[in-house]
Structure formats: C-alpha cells, structure tokens
Length: 378
Image (cartoon, rainbow, N blue to C red):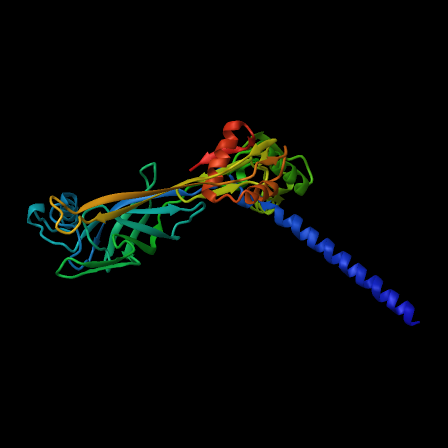
C-alpha cells in the first residue's frame, strides 16, 4: 500500500513538473511576440501638431528687453484690442515675454477636451517662472484654430544670480508647460464606422513582418480578411459582423501577438564605444588576430656640474631618453562560417578585446566581406 502511494506521488510530481515546463514554454513563446498595437498604426488614426504665438505676463523683471521689437508690437496690438491706444515706442516693461506655444491634438479629440501645451521663449527673456500665458489660439497646418491656450505656466527650473555675476541655474527656465491649459474648440471629422476597408501601417516596414501580421490577423479573425500590399502596409477588409463596430475590430487586431523580423545589423557609436549586435548577425569563415603596439618614451634631464675652479666651466643640462616598445602577443583565432552571436562574443572575449578594439575588428570584418550584417555607425 505504501509503495503504491509513493508511486502515485511520484507520477503526480512528474505531471506537475511537466505542466510547469509547458507553462514556462508557453510564457517564453508569448514573451517573444509583440502586440500589433506596438508595431503598427491604423491609417487615419493619428495626432496633429498645433502651434500659436502668445504673450506671457506677470514676470518679475525677467521678460523681454526693449530690443525685442515684436514683443512691443504685440503688446501694443493687444492693448489696442482692449480699447487702450498706446505707441509701441512708449512701452518700457520687462514683465512680458513673447513665446511660441505648441500642443499635440490627439485623434478623436472632442470639443471641451483639455491638452497640455509647451511654451518656449523666442525673445531674450531670462526666466518665465511665475508667468501666465494669455489667450493664445493654436492653429493646425491648414491655418484653422483647433484649440485655445491660457493659464499659469510651470518651468520646472529656476535661475538665481548675484551682483558679482555668478549664477545658479537648474533646467531651462525659458521653457515651460501649461498643464491642461488648452481647450479643444474644433474637431477633426473622422468616422470609423463608415469604412469597409482598414489600412494598417507598420512602424518599421519589413516584408517578413508584414506577412506575419497578415497571417496573424487572418488566424485571429478566422477568415482571409488581411492581405499585404507592400512591406509596410496591410489591407484589412472589414468582416460583415464588424461593419457597425469598427472599434471592437481594431481592438481585437491590436491585441494579436506577432514576432517581428529585422535585418541583421551591427550598430556602432564610436563616441561612447558602444556596440550593439542583433541575434541574426553571422560571420563567415575568417581568421582574426588582434594585437596592440605600445611605445613609451620617458625623458629625463640630468644636470652636469663642472669641476671646482675649472677654467671656462659651466653647468649644463643633458637630456636622457628611455624608449620602451611593447607589442601585444595575441593568438590567431579561427572563426567558423555561420557562427551565432553568442559564438562571436565568446571568440572576441577570448582575444581580450575592449569595446574600442571591437569596433576596429567589426569594421575590418565588414571590409573583408566576412560580416553578414549591415554595419551602421552613429
């Protein structure tokens, strides 16, 4: 009876281990996939840039100087619209700064929605801290006003100085934000439910990735509704039961997992000594030897004193040079054809190369035609 119980426990333990292994394998496979939402966008569902010119008031003497003519003209025009007529030459204030205001209008933004705006000084203002942005229309590329910005600004930095000219500055006090300071006044008309065809655009065009995305969509929607138009575009026919519910269709497509493909590439940053290699990088059969030549020159100056009471004797300085030459002795390493990135790293580590040396070796491998990858230097 005890033997049967132990056997049952052993079988159950083995099944648990097998189940855990299958779960881990499934998790590993899922981790390799990326949501379509993170690698592509639907055509027409995009944000738009807005820009406007405005004035920031209420500064503590850190605004634009009298040399900023456009600020004086803007103040004169603003006061004239308020019923106050003033000559721009008579304006002598430093509590106002001219700024450019930018914002991003998200897709499907509705009237009354609020947006964050970025305020940038365009004059010679020293600090925008404590200021308030006045009524500023924000226009799109078609010159139509889509939002209006106004409100107190936040710089997230400061600048303080003394009479001697020394100062302390944190961040950039001439750049600020107006949190939720813009109100959407005009909507961009766009109706998804009127479409019978959707276009999916990949962020990084690739024929293999586009094919995998189309296959994943067809498998997820149980029908041949997706086809690739080119390396970066997938056309999707809206199924009949999704005609009046395109939002649900887009949500279902965005959450499908796809493993993207990429071109074998080695990226080198010579300024920082950074080397990034993709997993598909391969090297043909090649022999690598890498050694360093070190030359050290040390100069010593000796003083030669004449004998006591020697006629015509004088003290002279005689230079003495020591030259030391060292040449690194590195073995010749044979690298077989088609090795993986792990083999490449182990082989180069065996040579004892530094990141700087690795950059030179990779460039030489590319010149020899042995590096089967694109070499990109940034």
